[in-house]
Length: 126
Image: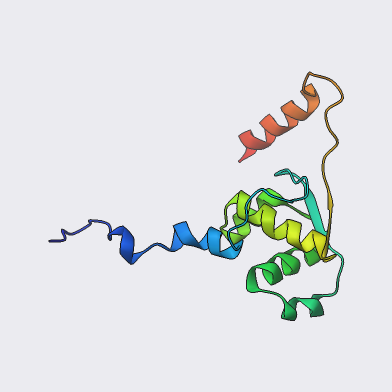
């Protein structure tokens, strides 16, 4: 017996658990480019190439034609896990549809105080 307000049983709504696995065709973390959540990607091929790609790949290319986006922004806009977006973006980089720029590694063991202050100020302004 189901009571009012009780969530549906798992077998009736598996979408959020299965979708990332299906989108990436079961791949995760292997043979991927070194992508960080703040890595910026931009499309370098014309939007006409989108028609030949799967929906998720096309969505990423359309977003990245407008301006460079970070992996985190793409993940948020698509509603996909970061790991799934990294796989999809890595595929598009390998196929020549996207190029990427990762932040340089830190030169010292200490974080940049000015950068941390800017992030803190940005979060406070939200």
